[in-house]
Length: 597
Image 1 (spheres, rainbow, N blue to C red):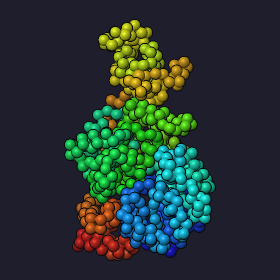
Image 2: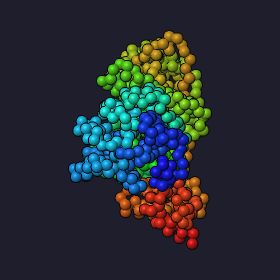
Image 3: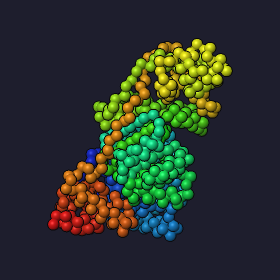
Image 4: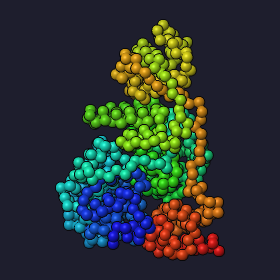
Protein backbone atom coordinates (compact mmCIF):
# COMPACT_ATOMS: atom_id res chain seq x y z
CA UNK A 1 0.00 0.00 0.00
CA UNK A 2 1.04 3.60 -0.54
CA UNK A 3 1.69 5.83 2.53
CA UNK A 4 -1.43 7.94 1.97
CA UNK A 5 -3.59 4.82 1.64
CA UNK A 6 -2.24 3.53 4.97
CA UNK A 7 -2.86 6.91 6.59
CA UNK A 8 -6.49 6.89 5.47
CA UNK A 9 -7.24 3.18 5.91
CA UNK A 10 -5.49 2.52 9.22
CA UNK A 11 -5.23 5.89 10.95
CA UNK A 12 -8.33 7.64 9.63
CA UNK A 13 -6.72 10.89 8.42
CA UNK A 14 -7.12 12.38 4.97
CA UNK A 15 -3.75 14.06 4.51
CA UNK A 16 -0.28 14.36 5.99
CA UNK A 17 0.84 17.50 7.79
CA UNK A 18 3.88 19.05 6.11
CA UNK A 19 6.64 17.85 6.21
CA UNK A 20 5.46 14.37 7.29
CA UNK A 21 5.07 13.26 3.66
CA UNK A 22 8.61 14.37 2.76
CA UNK A 23 10.13 12.63 5.80
CA UNK A 24 8.17 9.43 5.17
CA UNK A 25 9.14 9.33 1.48
CA UNK A 26 12.79 9.86 2.42
CA UNK A 27 12.85 7.00 4.94
CA UNK A 28 10.94 4.65 2.63
CA UNK A 29 13.65 5.35 0.03
CA UNK A 30 16.28 4.17 2.51
CA UNK A 31 17.60 7.57 3.58
CA UNK A 32 18.16 8.92 7.07
CA UNK A 33 16.43 11.84 8.82
CA UNK A 34 16.54 13.87 12.02
CA UNK A 35 13.07 15.12 12.96
CA UNK A 36 12.38 17.93 15.45
CA UNK A 37 8.61 18.08 15.83
CA UNK A 38 6.44 19.44 18.67
CA UNK A 39 4.80 17.01 21.05
CA UNK A 40 1.53 15.87 19.51
CA UNK A 41 2.72 16.91 16.05
CA UNK A 42 2.67 13.41 14.57
CA UNK A 43 6.25 12.16 15.01
CA UNK A 44 5.21 8.52 15.33
CA UNK A 45 3.69 8.46 11.84
CA UNK A 46 7.09 9.41 10.45
CA UNK A 47 8.47 6.00 11.36
CA UNK A 48 5.37 3.82 11.72
CA UNK A 49 4.21 4.27 8.12
CA UNK A 50 7.69 3.69 6.59
CA UNK A 51 7.96 0.55 8.73
CA UNK A 52 4.72 -0.70 7.16
CA UNK A 53 5.83 0.25 3.64
CA UNK A 54 9.34 -1.24 3.75
CA UNK A 55 10.13 -4.93 3.99
CA UNK A 56 11.08 -6.17 7.43
CA UNK A 57 10.53 -4.91 10.96
CA UNK A 58 10.84 -1.34 12.18
CA UNK A 59 12.91 -1.20 15.38
CA UNK A 60 11.86 1.70 17.60
CA UNK A 61 14.08 2.76 20.50
CA UNK A 62 11.92 3.99 23.38
CA UNK A 63 12.95 4.97 26.94
CA UNK A 64 9.97 3.79 29.00
CA UNK A 65 8.13 0.51 29.40
CA UNK A 66 4.78 2.29 29.89
CA UNK A 67 5.26 4.20 26.66
CA UNK A 68 6.11 1.03 24.75
CA UNK A 69 3.03 -0.74 26.08
CA UNK A 70 0.87 2.26 25.23
CA UNK A 71 2.15 2.43 21.66
CA UNK A 72 1.79 -1.31 21.14
CA UNK A 73 -1.79 -1.27 22.45
CA UNK A 74 -2.68 1.60 20.08
CA UNK A 75 -1.12 -0.20 17.09
CA UNK A 76 -3.01 -3.40 17.91
CA UNK A 77 -6.22 -1.38 17.67
CA UNK A 78 -5.20 -0.62 14.08
CA UNK A 79 -4.49 -4.31 13.35
CA UNK A 80 -0.75 -3.59 13.06
CA UNK A 81 1.55 -6.38 14.22
CA UNK A 82 3.48 -4.68 17.02
CA UNK A 83 5.36 -5.86 20.09
CA UNK A 84 7.73 -4.63 22.77
CA UNK A 85 10.61 -6.38 24.47
CA UNK A 86 11.41 -5.12 27.95
CA UNK A 87 12.20 -6.23 31.48
CA UNK A 88 8.55 -6.10 32.56
CA UNK A 89 7.55 -9.09 30.42
CA UNK A 90 7.12 -12.60 31.68
CA UNK A 91 9.74 -14.99 30.20
CA UNK A 92 7.12 -16.73 28.03
CA UNK A 93 5.88 -13.39 26.64
CA UNK A 94 9.41 -12.24 25.87
CA UNK A 95 10.26 -15.50 24.13
CA UNK A 96 7.08 -15.33 22.05
CA UNK A 97 7.99 -11.82 20.86
CA UNK A 98 11.57 -12.86 20.07
CA UNK A 99 10.30 -15.87 18.10
CA UNK A 100 7.89 -13.66 16.15
CA UNK A 101 10.77 -11.26 15.45
CA UNK A 102 13.02 -14.04 14.14
CA UNK A 103 10.21 -15.42 11.99
CA UNK A 104 9.38 -12.04 10.47
CA UNK A 105 5.91 -11.81 12.01
CA UNK A 106 6.27 -8.33 13.56
CA UNK A 107 5.90 -5.02 11.73
CA UNK A 108 7.07 -2.71 14.54
CA UNK A 109 9.12 -3.66 17.59
CA UNK A 110 9.72 -1.33 20.55
CA UNK A 111 12.86 -1.86 22.59
CA UNK A 112 14.80 0.05 25.26
CA UNK A 113 18.24 1.40 24.27
CA UNK A 114 20.13 -0.70 26.83
CA UNK A 115 18.59 -3.90 25.47
CA UNK A 116 19.12 -2.98 21.83
CA UNK A 117 22.89 -2.59 22.28
CA UNK A 118 23.34 -5.88 24.13
CA UNK A 119 25.76 -8.00 22.03
CA UNK A 120 23.40 -10.99 21.87
CA UNK A 121 20.46 -8.81 20.79
CA UNK A 122 22.52 -7.02 18.16
CA UNK A 123 23.74 -10.39 16.90
CA UNK A 124 20.16 -11.66 16.59
CA UNK A 125 19.09 -8.54 14.69
CA UNK A 126 21.78 -9.18 12.08
CA UNK A 127 19.83 -12.29 11.11
CA UNK A 128 16.56 -10.34 10.80
CA UNK A 129 15.24 -8.20 7.98
CA UNK A 130 15.31 -4.67 9.44
CA UNK A 131 13.15 -2.01 7.78
CA UNK A 132 14.47 0.94 9.80
CA UNK A 133 15.76 2.12 13.16
CA UNK A 134 13.73 4.92 14.82
CA UNK A 135 15.39 6.59 17.82
CA UNK A 136 12.65 8.34 19.79
CA UNK A 137 13.58 11.00 22.40
CA UNK A 138 16.86 11.35 20.48
CA UNK A 139 18.01 14.35 22.54
CA UNK A 140 19.04 11.74 25.14
CA UNK A 141 21.98 10.84 22.86
CA UNK A 142 23.73 14.16 23.31
CA UNK A 143 25.61 15.59 26.28
CA UNK A 144 24.45 18.95 24.95
CA UNK A 145 20.86 17.79 25.41
CA UNK A 146 18.83 18.27 28.56
CA UNK A 147 18.45 14.59 29.47
CA UNK A 148 21.65 12.82 28.39
CA UNK A 149 21.66 9.04 28.93
CA UNK A 150 24.75 6.88 28.35
CA UNK A 151 22.61 4.01 27.04
CA UNK A 152 21.41 6.29 24.28
CA UNK A 153 24.95 7.36 23.37
CA UNK A 154 25.76 3.70 22.70
CA UNK A 155 23.25 3.74 19.82
CA UNK A 156 25.94 5.29 17.61
CA UNK A 157 27.17 1.74 16.98
CA UNK A 158 24.11 1.20 14.74
CA UNK A 159 25.94 3.21 12.05
CA UNK A 160 28.67 0.61 11.64
CA UNK A 161 26.60 -2.48 12.52
CA UNK A 162 23.72 -1.71 10.10
CA UNK A 163 25.09 0.79 7.54
CA UNK A 164 22.37 0.18 4.96
CA UNK A 165 19.36 0.45 7.27
CA UNK A 166 17.72 3.92 7.38
CA UNK A 167 17.96 5.73 10.71
CA UNK A 168 15.42 8.31 11.84
CA UNK A 169 16.04 10.32 15.02
CA UNK A 170 13.05 12.07 16.59
CA UNK A 171 12.59 14.53 19.44
CA UNK A 172 10.36 17.43 20.38
CA UNK A 173 13.06 19.60 21.89
CA UNK A 174 16.66 20.10 20.79
CA UNK A 175 18.68 23.28 20.41
CA UNK A 176 21.21 23.74 17.60
CA UNK A 177 24.23 22.08 19.35
CA UNK A 178 22.07 19.10 20.34
CA UNK A 179 20.75 18.69 16.79
CA UNK A 180 24.26 18.75 15.36
CA UNK A 181 25.44 16.18 17.91
CA UNK A 182 22.55 13.80 17.14
CA UNK A 183 23.34 13.98 13.44
CA UNK A 184 27.05 13.43 14.07
CA UNK A 185 26.53 10.35 16.24
CA UNK A 186 24.04 8.73 13.85
CA UNK A 187 25.87 9.83 10.67
CA UNK A 188 22.84 11.76 9.45
CA UNK A 189 23.53 14.60 7.05
CA UNK A 190 22.70 17.93 8.71
CA UNK A 191 20.66 18.95 5.65
CA UNK A 192 18.43 15.94 6.43
CA UNK A 193 17.23 17.69 9.62
CA UNK A 194 13.56 18.63 9.57
CA UNK A 195 12.64 21.34 12.08
CA UNK A 196 8.88 21.50 12.18
CA UNK A 197 8.58 24.42 14.56
CA UNK A 198 8.78 24.61 18.34
CA UNK A 199 5.69 26.68 18.98
CA UNK A 200 2.83 25.10 20.91
CA UNK A 201 0.20 27.81 20.42
CA UNK A 202 -2.47 26.01 22.43
CA UNK A 203 -0.44 26.22 25.66
CA UNK A 204 -0.74 29.29 27.89
CA UNK A 205 2.42 29.96 29.95
CA UNK A 206 2.44 31.48 33.46
CA UNK A 207 5.59 31.96 35.59
CA UNK A 208 5.71 33.58 39.03
CA UNK A 209 7.90 33.76 42.15
CA UNK A 210 7.00 31.04 44.61
CA UNK A 211 4.59 32.09 47.37
CA UNK A 212 1.79 30.06 48.99
CA UNK A 213 2.09 27.57 46.13
CA UNK A 214 0.03 24.77 47.70
CA UNK A 215 -2.92 27.07 48.20
CA UNK A 216 -2.54 28.43 44.67
CA UNK A 217 -2.49 24.90 43.22
CA UNK A 218 -5.70 23.90 45.00
CA UNK A 219 -7.31 27.14 43.92
CA UNK A 220 -6.43 26.42 40.28
CA UNK A 221 -7.59 22.81 40.52
CA UNK A 222 -10.96 23.94 41.85
CA UNK A 223 -11.55 27.06 39.78
CA UNK A 224 -9.75 26.47 36.48
CA UNK A 225 -9.05 22.75 36.11
CA UNK A 226 -11.94 21.01 37.85
CA UNK A 227 -12.50 17.55 36.36
CA UNK A 228 -9.30 17.70 34.28
CA UNK A 229 -6.10 15.64 34.23
CA UNK A 230 -2.70 17.20 34.78
CA UNK A 231 0.86 16.76 36.03
CA UNK A 232 2.55 18.58 38.93
CA UNK A 233 6.35 18.36 39.02
CA UNK A 234 8.43 18.60 42.21
CA UNK A 235 12.22 18.52 42.52
CA UNK A 236 12.48 15.79 45.18
CA UNK A 237 10.76 12.57 46.22
CA UNK A 238 10.01 14.03 49.65
CA UNK A 239 8.22 17.02 48.15
CA UNK A 240 6.23 14.72 45.83
CA UNK A 241 4.95 12.71 48.78
CA UNK A 242 4.20 15.78 50.92
CA UNK A 243 2.25 17.52 48.15
CA UNK A 244 0.35 14.35 47.20
CA UNK A 245 -0.75 13.77 50.78
CA UNK A 246 -1.77 17.42 51.17
CA UNK A 247 -3.78 17.41 47.93
CA UNK A 248 -5.57 14.22 48.94
CA UNK A 249 -6.52 15.89 52.21
CA UNK A 250 -8.05 18.70 50.15
CA UNK A 251 -10.19 16.21 48.24
CA UNK A 252 -8.06 16.09 45.08
CA UNK A 253 -7.71 12.78 43.21
CA UNK A 254 -3.89 12.87 43.33
CA UNK A 255 -1.33 10.12 42.69
CA UNK A 256 2.42 10.08 43.37
CA UNK A 257 5.25 8.98 41.10
CA UNK A 258 8.99 8.97 41.80
CA UNK A 259 11.93 6.61 41.40
CA UNK A 260 12.03 5.72 45.10
CA UNK A 261 8.61 4.06 45.01
CA UNK A 262 8.07 0.34 44.70
CA UNK A 263 8.14 -0.47 40.98
CA UNK A 264 4.70 -2.10 40.99
CA UNK A 265 3.11 0.85 42.83
CA UNK A 266 4.76 3.27 40.41
CA UNK A 267 3.51 1.29 37.41
CA UNK A 268 0.01 1.06 38.88
CA UNK A 269 -0.20 4.83 39.38
CA UNK A 270 1.04 5.52 35.87
CA UNK A 271 -1.53 3.10 34.49
CA UNK A 272 -4.31 4.86 36.42
CA UNK A 273 -3.19 8.22 35.14
CA UNK A 274 -3.18 7.02 31.53
CA UNK A 275 -6.55 5.28 31.70
CA UNK A 276 -8.61 7.43 34.08
CA UNK A 277 -9.93 10.94 33.68
CA UNK A 278 -9.52 13.84 36.14
CA UNK A 279 -6.35 12.44 37.72
CA UNK A 280 -3.57 14.70 39.02
CA UNK A 281 -0.10 13.09 38.95
CA UNK A 282 2.42 14.58 41.37
CA UNK A 283 5.85 13.49 40.22
CA UNK A 284 9.55 14.04 39.84
CA UNK A 285 10.83 14.36 36.28
CA UNK A 286 11.18 10.57 36.29
CA UNK A 287 7.58 10.67 35.08
CA UNK A 288 6.37 11.86 31.74
CA UNK A 289 8.85 11.32 28.92
CA UNK A 290 6.86 10.10 25.94
CA UNK A 291 3.57 9.98 27.86
CA UNK A 292 0.94 9.69 25.16
CA UNK A 293 -2.13 10.87 27.09
CA UNK A 294 -3.67 13.53 24.81
CA UNK A 295 -6.05 15.17 27.30
CA UNK A 296 -3.55 16.46 29.89
CA UNK A 297 -4.90 19.96 30.41
CA UNK A 298 -2.18 21.40 32.64
CA UNK A 299 1.44 20.96 33.73
CA UNK A 300 2.67 22.66 36.90
CA UNK A 301 6.27 23.06 38.07
CA UNK A 302 6.58 23.82 41.77
CA UNK A 303 10.32 24.44 41.34
CA UNK A 304 12.53 25.58 38.51
CA UNK A 305 13.65 22.86 36.04
CA UNK A 306 17.27 22.45 34.87
CA UNK A 307 17.02 24.42 31.64
CA UNK A 308 14.67 25.66 28.93
CA UNK A 309 14.77 22.39 26.96
CA UNK A 310 13.65 20.40 30.01
CA UNK A 311 10.95 22.96 30.79
CA UNK A 312 9.64 22.98 27.21
CA UNK A 313 9.72 19.19 26.95
CA UNK A 314 7.80 18.82 30.21
CA UNK A 315 5.20 21.52 29.50
CA UNK A 316 4.64 19.90 26.09
CA UNK A 317 3.01 16.97 27.85
CA UNK A 318 -0.05 19.20 28.17
CA UNK A 319 -2.47 19.66 25.29
CA UNK A 320 -1.18 16.94 22.97
CA UNK A 321 -4.65 16.91 21.40
CA UNK A 322 -4.21 20.52 20.26
CA UNK A 323 -6.91 21.80 22.63
CA UNK A 324 -6.25 24.64 25.11
CA UNK A 325 -3.88 23.76 27.95
CA UNK A 326 -1.88 25.65 30.57
CA UNK A 327 1.66 25.53 31.96
CA UNK A 328 2.50 27.01 35.36
CA UNK A 329 5.94 27.51 36.92
CA UNK A 330 6.71 28.81 40.42
CA UNK A 331 10.35 29.51 41.23
CA UNK A 332 12.51 30.72 44.08
CA UNK A 333 16.08 31.68 44.83
CA UNK A 334 16.67 28.38 46.64
CA UNK A 335 15.90 26.48 43.40
CA UNK A 336 18.64 28.38 41.59
CA UNK A 337 21.11 27.77 44.42
CA UNK A 338 20.34 24.04 44.43
CA UNK A 339 20.68 23.63 40.67
CA UNK A 340 23.92 25.60 40.54
CA UNK A 341 25.33 23.45 43.33
CA UNK A 342 24.33 20.26 41.49
CA UNK A 343 26.11 21.49 38.38
CA UNK A 344 29.26 22.44 40.30
CA UNK A 345 29.36 19.14 42.20
CA UNK A 346 28.70 16.94 39.18
CA UNK A 347 31.36 14.77 37.54
CA UNK A 348 31.07 16.71 34.28
CA UNK A 349 34.09 18.47 32.84
CA UNK A 350 34.58 22.20 33.10
CA UNK A 351 33.34 22.81 29.55
CA UNK A 352 30.15 20.84 30.21
CA UNK A 353 29.59 22.70 33.49
CA UNK A 354 29.87 26.01 31.67
CA UNK A 355 27.23 24.81 29.19
CA UNK A 356 24.88 23.76 32.00
CA UNK A 357 25.32 27.09 33.80
CA UNK A 358 24.58 28.95 30.56
CA UNK A 359 21.45 26.86 29.99
CA UNK A 360 20.26 27.49 33.56
CA UNK A 361 20.90 31.20 33.14
CA UNK A 362 18.73 31.21 30.00
CA UNK A 363 15.86 29.70 31.99
CA UNK A 364 16.33 32.25 34.76
CA UNK A 365 16.10 34.93 32.10
CA UNK A 366 12.78 33.44 30.98
CA UNK A 367 11.49 33.58 34.56
CA UNK A 368 12.54 37.18 35.06
CA UNK A 369 11.63 38.58 31.64
CA UNK A 370 9.03 41.27 31.19
CA UNK A 371 8.67 40.21 27.53
CA UNK A 372 6.22 37.76 26.00
CA UNK A 373 7.16 34.29 27.32
CA UNK A 374 6.62 32.65 23.94
CA UNK A 375 8.96 35.09 22.22
CA UNK A 376 11.73 34.26 24.70
CA UNK A 377 11.13 30.51 24.41
CA UNK A 378 11.15 30.47 20.63
CA UNK A 379 14.16 32.77 20.42
CA UNK A 380 16.10 30.19 22.46
CA UNK A 381 15.43 27.67 19.69
CA UNK A 382 16.42 30.17 16.97
CA UNK A 383 12.84 30.97 15.99
CA UNK A 384 11.08 34.31 16.16
CA UNK A 385 7.49 35.37 16.70
CA UNK A 386 5.31 38.32 17.51
CA UNK A 387 4.00 38.77 21.06
CA UNK A 388 1.54 35.90 21.45
CA UNK A 389 -1.19 37.51 23.57
CA UNK A 390 -1.45 34.09 25.24
CA UNK A 391 0.87 34.12 28.27
CA UNK A 392 0.93 35.86 31.64
CA UNK A 393 3.18 38.72 30.54
CA UNK A 394 0.90 39.42 27.57
CA UNK A 395 -2.23 39.14 29.74
CA UNK A 396 -0.87 41.52 32.39
CA UNK A 397 2.40 43.18 31.32
CA UNK A 398 4.67 43.41 34.38
CA UNK A 399 5.83 46.82 35.51
CA UNK A 400 9.58 47.36 35.53
CA UNK A 401 11.68 49.97 37.32
CA UNK A 402 15.20 51.38 37.21
CA UNK A 403 16.93 49.28 39.87
CA UNK A 404 20.47 50.54 39.24
CA UNK A 405 20.83 52.42 42.54
CA UNK A 406 18.94 49.78 44.54
CA UNK A 407 21.19 47.02 43.19
CA UNK A 408 24.30 49.06 43.99
CA UNK A 409 23.09 49.57 47.55
CA UNK A 410 22.32 45.89 48.13
CA UNK A 411 25.57 44.67 46.58
CA UNK A 412 27.57 47.23 48.57
CA UNK A 413 25.85 46.10 51.76
CA UNK A 414 26.77 42.48 51.01
CA UNK A 415 30.38 43.52 50.44
CA UNK A 416 30.69 45.83 53.48
CA UNK A 417 29.24 43.21 55.87
CA UNK A 418 31.82 40.61 54.84
CA UNK A 419 30.06 38.57 52.11
CA UNK A 420 28.91 35.84 54.48
CA UNK A 421 25.35 36.73 55.58
CA UNK A 422 22.03 35.67 54.11
CA UNK A 423 19.54 37.83 52.25
CA UNK A 424 17.19 38.40 55.21
CA UNK A 425 20.07 39.75 57.31
CA UNK A 426 21.21 42.04 54.48
CA UNK A 427 17.67 43.40 54.19
CA UNK A 428 17.64 44.09 57.94
CA UNK A 429 20.86 46.11 57.50
CA UNK A 430 19.47 48.06 54.57
CA UNK A 431 16.24 48.94 56.38
CA UNK A 432 18.00 49.96 59.62
CA UNK A 433 16.84 47.16 61.90
CA UNK A 434 17.83 47.41 65.58
CA UNK A 435 18.02 43.63 66.05
CA UNK A 436 20.34 42.18 68.68
CA UNK A 437 22.44 40.41 66.01
CA UNK A 438 23.11 43.66 64.17
CA UNK A 439 23.95 45.60 67.31
CA UNK A 440 26.16 42.82 68.70
CA UNK A 441 28.22 42.81 65.52
CA UNK A 442 28.24 46.63 65.47
CA UNK A 443 26.90 46.48 61.92
CA UNK A 444 24.85 49.56 62.69
CA UNK A 445 28.18 51.39 62.19
CA UNK A 446 28.50 50.23 58.55
CA UNK A 447 28.20 52.91 55.88
CA UNK A 448 25.44 50.89 54.21
CA UNK A 449 23.34 50.55 57.39
CA UNK A 450 19.86 52.04 56.93
CA UNK A 451 20.45 53.32 53.40
CA UNK A 452 17.51 51.38 51.94
CA UNK A 453 14.49 52.84 53.72
CA UNK A 454 12.86 53.78 50.41
CA UNK A 455 11.80 50.15 49.93
CA UNK A 456 9.92 47.77 52.21
CA UNK A 457 11.49 44.53 53.40
CA UNK A 458 9.41 42.53 50.94
CA UNK A 459 10.53 44.76 48.09
CA UNK A 460 14.19 44.39 49.08
CA UNK A 461 13.78 40.62 49.31
CA UNK A 462 12.44 40.53 45.76
CA UNK A 463 15.27 42.76 44.53
CA UNK A 464 17.77 40.45 46.23
CA UNK A 465 16.20 37.33 44.73
CA UNK A 466 16.38 38.86 41.26
CA UNK A 467 20.06 39.74 41.75
CA UNK A 468 20.76 36.13 42.68
CA UNK A 469 18.82 34.70 39.76
CA UNK A 470 20.55 37.15 37.40
CA UNK A 471 23.94 35.97 38.65
CA UNK A 472 25.12 39.20 40.34
CA UNK A 473 25.21 37.42 43.69
CA UNK A 474 26.32 33.91 44.65
CA UNK A 475 24.78 31.97 47.52
CA UNK A 476 26.96 29.72 49.67
CA UNK A 477 24.93 26.54 49.33
CA UNK A 478 27.35 24.60 51.58
CA UNK A 479 27.07 26.94 54.54
CA UNK A 480 24.13 28.99 55.77
CA UNK A 481 23.07 30.70 52.57
CA UNK A 482 25.57 33.54 52.84
CA UNK A 483 25.69 35.97 49.91
CA UNK A 484 28.82 36.97 48.02
CA UNK A 485 29.44 39.08 44.94
CA UNK A 486 30.04 37.18 41.72
CA UNK A 487 32.48 38.40 39.07
CA UNK A 488 29.48 39.80 37.25
CA UNK A 489 28.31 41.58 40.42
CA UNK A 490 31.75 43.06 41.03
CA UNK A 491 31.82 44.32 37.43
CA UNK A 492 28.36 45.82 37.87
CA UNK A 493 29.47 47.82 40.91
CA UNK A 494 32.67 48.94 39.24
CA UNK A 495 31.14 49.93 35.91
CA UNK A 496 27.81 51.25 37.33
CA UNK A 497 25.80 49.59 34.56
CA UNK A 498 22.06 50.39 34.27
CA UNK A 499 19.71 47.65 35.47
CA UNK A 500 15.96 47.13 35.03
CA UNK A 501 14.11 44.77 37.38
CA UNK A 502 10.49 43.71 37.72
CA UNK A 503 8.36 45.41 40.32
CA UNK A 504 6.77 43.17 42.90
CA UNK A 505 3.31 42.19 41.67
CA UNK A 506 0.55 43.71 43.72
CA UNK A 507 -2.27 42.11 41.74
CA UNK A 508 -3.19 38.46 41.80
CA UNK A 509 -2.91 36.97 38.29
CA UNK A 510 -6.39 36.81 36.91
CA UNK A 511 -7.83 33.33 36.76
CA UNK A 512 -9.13 31.96 33.52
CA UNK A 513 -10.98 28.82 32.75
CA UNK A 514 -9.01 26.32 30.71
CA UNK A 515 -11.36 25.49 27.88
CA UNK A 516 -12.37 21.86 27.49
CA UNK A 517 -13.44 20.26 24.26
CA UNK A 518 -17.10 20.43 25.29
CA UNK A 519 -16.95 24.20 25.72
CA UNK A 520 -16.28 24.55 21.99
CA UNK A 521 -19.49 22.71 21.15
CA UNK A 522 -22.93 24.23 20.62
CA UNK A 523 -25.23 23.66 23.59
CA UNK A 524 -27.28 21.08 21.67
CA UNK A 525 -24.18 18.91 21.07
CA UNK A 526 -22.77 18.87 24.60
CA UNK A 527 -25.12 16.23 25.94
CA UNK A 528 -24.40 14.00 22.95
CA UNK A 529 -20.65 14.48 23.46
CA UNK A 530 -21.00 13.38 27.10
CA UNK A 531 -22.94 10.28 26.00
CA UNK A 532 -20.28 9.41 23.41
CA UNK A 533 -17.57 9.77 26.08
CA UNK A 534 -19.50 7.45 28.37
CA UNK A 535 -19.72 4.79 25.64
CA UNK A 536 -16.00 5.20 24.95
CA UNK A 537 -15.24 4.65 28.66
CA UNK A 538 -17.29 1.43 28.61
CA UNK A 539 -15.46 0.15 25.54
CA UNK A 540 -12.07 1.09 26.99
CA UNK A 541 -12.83 -0.90 30.12
CA UNK A 542 -14.04 -3.87 28.09
CA UNK A 543 -10.95 -3.89 25.83
CA UNK A 544 -8.55 -2.94 28.65
CA UNK A 545 -7.07 0.06 26.82
CA UNK A 546 -6.91 3.80 27.59
CA UNK A 547 -9.99 5.64 26.33
CA UNK A 548 -8.00 7.77 23.89
CA UNK A 549 -6.71 4.64 22.13
CA UNK A 550 -10.28 4.10 20.92
CA UNK A 551 -10.98 7.68 19.79
CA UNK A 552 -9.57 11.05 20.84
CA UNK A 553 -11.86 13.71 22.29
CA UNK A 554 -11.51 15.69 19.07
CA UNK A 555 -12.96 12.76 17.11
CA UNK A 556 -15.91 12.53 19.51
CA UNK A 557 -16.38 16.28 19.24
CA UNK A 558 -16.61 15.99 15.46
CA UNK A 559 -19.14 13.17 15.81
CA UNK A 560 -21.26 15.31 18.14
CA UNK A 561 -21.13 18.24 15.71
CA UNK A 562 -21.79 16.34 12.49
CA UNK A 563 -24.02 13.52 13.79
CA UNK A 564 -23.16 11.01 11.03
CA UNK A 565 -25.88 8.42 10.39
CA UNK A 566 -24.08 5.82 8.25
CA UNK A 567 -20.70 4.19 7.66
CA UNK A 568 -19.33 6.47 4.94
CA UNK A 569 -20.14 9.59 6.93
CA UNK A 570 -18.39 8.11 9.96
CA UNK A 571 -15.29 7.32 7.89
CA UNK A 572 -15.14 10.96 6.81
CA UNK A 573 -14.50 12.03 10.41
CA UNK A 574 -10.86 12.64 11.28
CA UNK A 575 -9.40 9.81 13.34
CA UNK A 576 -11.77 7.06 12.14
CA UNK A 577 -10.21 4.64 9.68
CA UNK A 578 -11.70 1.44 8.36
CA UNK A 579 -10.03 -0.67 11.05
CA UNK A 580 -11.30 1.49 13.91
CA UNK A 581 -14.76 1.61 12.37
CA UNK A 582 -14.95 -2.18 12.16
CA UNK A 583 -14.04 -2.41 15.84
CA UNK A 584 -16.08 0.42 17.32
CA UNK A 585 -18.03 2.30 14.67
CA UNK A 586 -21.38 0.59 15.13
CA UNK A 587 -21.36 1.17 18.89
CA UNK A 588 -21.10 4.93 18.36
CA UNK A 589 -23.38 4.98 15.31
CA UNK A 590 -26.10 3.44 17.46
CA UNK A 591 -25.92 6.42 19.85
CA UNK A 592 -25.87 8.94 17.00
CA UNK A 593 -28.92 7.40 15.34
CA UNK A 594 -30.77 7.26 18.64
CA UNK A 595 -30.01 10.93 19.26
CA UNK A 596 -31.35 11.88 15.82
CA UNK A 597 -34.55 9.90 16.26
